[in-house]
Amino acid sequence: MNKKLAVALSGGAVLVLALSGCSSDDGNEKLDAWAKQVCDAVKPQAQKIEAANAAIQKETSDNSTPEAVQKTDAQAFQDMADAYKAIGTAVNTAGAPNVDDGETKKANAVKELNEISASYAGLKKQVDGLDTKNQAKFADGLKGVATQLDKLSQSGNDALKALEEGDVGKSMAKQESCKSTSASPAASSTAS
Image (tube, rainbow, N blue to C red):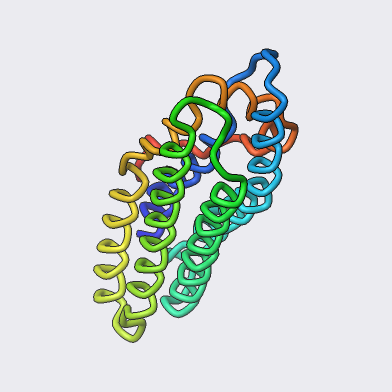
Protein backbone atom coordinates (compact mmCIF):
# COMPACT_ATOMS: atom_id res chain seq x y z
CA MET A 1 0.00 0.00 0.00
CA ASN A 2 2.75 2.44 0.85
CA LYS A 3 4.10 1.92 -2.67
CA LYS A 4 1.06 3.81 -3.99
CA LEU A 5 1.84 6.53 -1.48
CA ALA A 6 5.43 6.66 -2.73
CA VAL A 7 4.32 6.87 -6.36
CA ALA A 8 1.85 9.65 -5.56
CA LEU A 9 4.56 11.44 -3.62
CA SER A 10 7.04 11.44 -6.43
CA GLY A 11 4.68 13.71 -8.37
CA GLY A 12 4.96 16.30 -5.62
CA ALA A 13 8.69 16.51 -5.96
CA VAL A 14 8.24 17.58 -9.55
CA LEU A 15 6.78 20.87 -8.29
CA VAL A 16 10.08 21.93 -6.79
CA LEU A 17 12.08 20.50 -9.64
CA ALA A 18 9.99 22.70 -11.93
CA LEU A 19 11.94 25.61 -10.47
CA SER A 20 14.87 24.70 -12.69
CA GLY A 21 13.70 26.35 -15.93
CA CYS A 22 15.34 25.99 -19.36
CA SER A 23 18.58 27.53 -20.56
CA SER A 24 19.55 30.69 -22.40
CA ASP A 25 22.28 33.34 -22.16
CA ASP A 26 20.30 36.56 -22.54
CA GLY A 27 21.63 38.95 -19.92
CA ASN A 28 19.52 40.70 -17.29
CA GLU A 29 21.60 41.36 -14.19
CA LYS A 30 18.71 42.24 -11.86
CA LEU A 31 16.79 39.17 -12.93
CA ASP A 32 19.88 36.97 -12.67
CA ALA A 33 20.47 38.24 -9.13
CA TRP A 34 16.84 37.49 -8.25
CA ALA A 35 17.09 34.00 -9.80
CA LYS A 36 20.32 33.29 -7.89
CA GLN A 37 18.72 34.29 -4.60
CA VAL A 38 15.68 32.08 -5.21
CA CYS A 39 17.66 29.12 -6.57
CA ASP A 40 20.14 29.20 -3.68
CA ALA A 41 17.23 29.12 -1.22
CA VAL A 42 15.30 26.43 -3.12
CA LYS A 43 18.16 23.94 -3.43
CA PRO A 44 18.32 22.80 0.23
CA GLN A 45 14.50 22.62 0.35
CA ALA A 46 14.40 20.50 -2.81
CA GLN A 47 16.93 18.16 -1.18
CA LYS A 48 14.73 17.98 1.93
CA ILE A 49 11.72 17.05 -0.23
CA GLU A 50 13.72 14.40 -2.10
CA ALA A 51 14.91 12.94 1.23
CA ALA A 52 11.31 12.83 2.50
CA ASN A 53 10.23 11.06 -0.70
CA ALA A 54 13.05 8.55 -0.31
CA ALA A 55 12.12 7.89 3.33
CA ILE A 56 8.52 7.10 2.39
CA GLN A 57 9.58 4.87 -0.49
CA LYS A 58 11.96 2.99 1.80
CA GLU A 59 9.40 2.45 4.56
CA THR A 60 6.80 0.28 2.83
CA SER A 61 3.93 -1.29 4.71
CA ASP A 62 4.90 -4.69 3.24
CA ASN A 63 7.93 -5.02 5.49
CA SER A 64 7.33 -2.42 8.21
CA THR A 65 5.03 -2.10 11.19
CA PRO A 66 2.14 0.36 10.93
CA GLU A 67 3.81 2.41 13.70
CA ALA A 68 7.05 2.68 11.70
CA VAL A 69 5.18 3.64 8.52
CA GLN A 70 3.11 6.20 10.43
CA LYS A 71 6.17 7.76 12.06
CA THR A 72 8.13 7.92 8.78
CA ASP A 73 5.23 9.28 6.72
CA ALA A 74 4.27 11.88 9.34
CA GLN A 75 7.85 13.14 9.54
CA ALA A 76 8.16 13.19 5.74
CA PHE A 77 4.95 15.22 5.37
CA GLN A 78 6.13 17.64 8.06
CA ASP A 79 9.46 18.04 6.25
CA MET A 80 7.64 18.70 2.98
CA ALA A 81 5.30 21.23 4.60
CA ASP A 82 8.32 23.03 6.05
CA ALA A 83 10.21 22.91 2.75
CA TYR A 84 7.38 24.34 0.63
CA LYS A 85 6.78 27.03 3.26
CA ALA A 86 10.50 27.92 3.15
CA ILE A 87 10.43 28.09 -0.66
CA GLY A 88 7.41 30.42 -0.48
CA THR A 89 9.29 32.59 2.01
CA ALA A 90 12.36 32.61 -0.25
CA VAL A 91 10.36 33.72 -3.28
CA ASN A 92 8.60 36.36 -1.16
CA THR A 93 11.90 37.62 0.29
CA ALA A 94 13.49 37.82 -3.17
CA GLY A 95 10.66 40.14 -4.17
CA ALA A 96 9.11 40.45 -7.59
CA PRO A 97 11.27 39.33 -10.51
CA ASN A 98 12.28 42.15 -12.88
CA VAL A 99 9.74 41.20 -15.58
CA ASP A 100 6.29 42.39 -16.74
CA ASP A 101 3.68 41.50 -14.13
CA GLY A 102 6.46 40.27 -11.79
CA GLU A 103 4.63 41.33 -8.62
CA THR A 104 1.50 39.35 -9.54
CA LYS A 105 3.54 36.32 -10.58
CA LYS A 106 5.48 36.42 -7.30
CA ALA A 107 2.34 36.84 -5.16
CA ASN A 108 0.56 33.97 -6.94
CA ALA A 109 3.57 31.65 -6.61
CA VAL A 110 3.97 32.43 -2.89
CA LYS A 111 0.25 31.82 -2.29
CA GLU A 112 0.46 28.50 -4.16
CA LEU A 113 3.58 27.37 -2.28
CA ASN A 114 1.93 28.20 1.05
CA GLU A 115 -1.18 26.23 0.02
CA ILE A 116 0.98 23.22 -0.89
CA SER A 117 2.71 23.53 2.49
CA ALA A 118 -0.67 23.60 4.26
CA SER A 119 -1.81 20.53 2.29
CA TYR A 120 1.25 18.54 3.44
CA ALA A 121 0.64 19.69 7.02
CA GLY A 122 -2.93 18.38 6.63
CA LEU A 123 -1.62 15.03 5.37
CA LYS A 124 0.66 14.82 8.40
CA LYS A 125 -2.36 15.30 10.70
CA GLN A 126 -4.24 12.65 8.74
CA VAL A 127 -1.37 10.15 9.09
CA ASP A 128 -0.96 10.97 12.80
CA GLY A 129 -4.65 10.13 13.27
CA LEU A 130 -4.47 6.66 11.68
CA ASP A 131 -5.18 3.61 13.85
CA THR A 132 -1.92 1.62 13.95
CA LYS A 133 -3.44 -1.09 16.18
CA ASN A 134 -5.70 -2.36 13.39
CA GLN A 135 -3.78 -3.33 10.23
CA ALA A 136 -6.86 -3.23 7.97
CA LYS A 137 -8.03 0.19 9.24
CA PHE A 138 -4.49 1.48 8.95
CA ALA A 139 -4.22 0.28 5.33
CA ASP A 140 -7.58 1.89 4.50
CA GLY A 141 -6.42 5.12 6.14
CA LEU A 142 -3.22 5.04 4.09
CA LYS A 143 -5.29 4.59 0.92
CA GLY A 144 -7.12 7.80 1.83
CA VAL A 145 -3.82 9.59 2.37
CA ALA A 146 -2.51 8.28 -0.96
CA THR A 147 -5.64 9.56 -2.71
CA GLN A 148 -5.20 13.01 -1.16
CA LEU A 149 -1.53 12.96 -2.08
CA ASP A 150 -2.31 11.99 -5.64
CA LYS A 151 -4.69 14.97 -5.92
CA LEU A 152 -2.01 17.22 -4.46
CA SER A 153 0.68 16.01 -6.85
CA GLN A 154 -1.64 16.49 -9.83
CA SER A 155 -3.10 19.80 -8.71
CA GLY A 156 -2.16 22.68 -10.93
CA ASN A 157 1.07 24.43 -10.12
CA ASP A 158 0.07 27.13 -12.58
CA ALA A 159 1.38 30.04 -10.51
CA LEU A 160 4.83 28.43 -10.31
CA LYS A 161 4.79 27.79 -14.05
CA ALA A 162 3.73 31.40 -14.67
CA LEU A 163 6.54 32.65 -12.41
CA GLU A 164 9.08 30.65 -14.40
CA GLU A 165 7.96 31.66 -17.88
CA GLY A 166 10.17 33.52 -20.28
CA ASP A 167 13.11 35.50 -18.95
CA VAL A 168 12.66 34.30 -15.35
CA GLY A 169 13.08 30.68 -16.44
CA LYS A 170 16.09 31.60 -18.54
CA SER A 171 17.75 33.37 -15.63
CA MET A 172 16.98 30.49 -13.26
CA ALA A 173 18.41 27.99 -15.72
CA LYS A 174 21.76 29.80 -15.59
CA GLN A 175 22.00 29.41 -11.80
CA GLU A 176 24.20 26.56 -10.64
CA SER A 177 21.93 25.89 -7.65
CA CYS A 178 18.88 25.48 -9.91
CA LYS A 179 20.71 23.20 -12.33
CA SER A 180 21.68 20.78 -9.58
CA THR A 181 18.14 20.88 -8.16
CA SER A 182 16.77 19.00 -11.13
CA ALA A 183 18.19 15.65 -10.10
CA SER A 184 16.23 12.78 -11.61
CA PRO A 185 12.57 13.24 -10.74
CA ALA A 186 11.01 9.88 -9.85
CA ALA A 187 8.65 8.39 -12.40
CA SER A 188 5.27 9.71 -11.40
CA SER A 189 3.27 7.93 -14.07
CA THR A 190 3.85 4.35 -12.89
CA ALA A 191 1.48 2.65 -10.46
CA SER A 192 1.81 -0.52 -8.45
